[in-house]
Image (tube, rainbow, N blue to C red):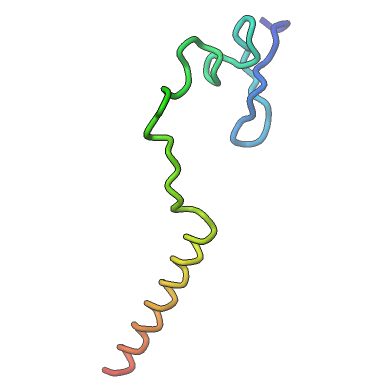
Length: 78
């Protein structure tokens, strides 16, 4: 077990996965070495939606600024 190759995947913290790789592969059973692992072809859950693009984030921030100004204007009218 100690002499076996290690998985080549990176963890969320940036370090290497320390699990042993599946025989004949470079990944462990949790990172894609197991047969049938991974998303199915044409996976609709993996489609990109663009909600976190730089432009979309900037647009949401601008909307928040405009809403804040409108709230302050309404408060001043009371």
